[in-house]
Length: 192
Image 1 (cartoon, rainbow, N blue to C red):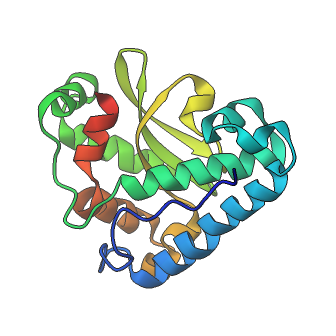
Image 2 (image 1 turned 135 degrees about the vertical axis):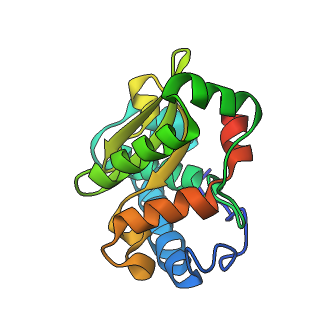
């Protein structure tokens, strides 16, 4: 069964003005779709054709891994955001952030610094690593599951994620992601 481009969890203009419909058209409609199309070409007629996306990711490398992982990463990223998001989490997630980072302000600072410092294309992640939360970055298509970590949240720092709306101002994009977009309910659900 071929892999499919999952539907966005909101309308393509829902994240305006932070992430515009134009960015969604390119990022989701072109980049994410291309990864799905390439993944289907690479898996057609192989043992991977009927495997789960996660199984393909864990069993592959090279071009197959890159396309499978980017399908997963992007699907996860879209769910990490919502219209009217941002602010601060509550409950067990807020407690875990305070326990492992000192405060929400410390977490925000550390996450932003990691996202901005990621050289070239990649991702900034909030992960569960054993019984602690951690911030990590990955280059290109790499993702936490390849390193025994559970992804809780990600911010895409490939230039196509922000260049139309923020040009080369990655720090402004990451701040806007944290202030106005993060879907803390999704992140908390990943922790649970």
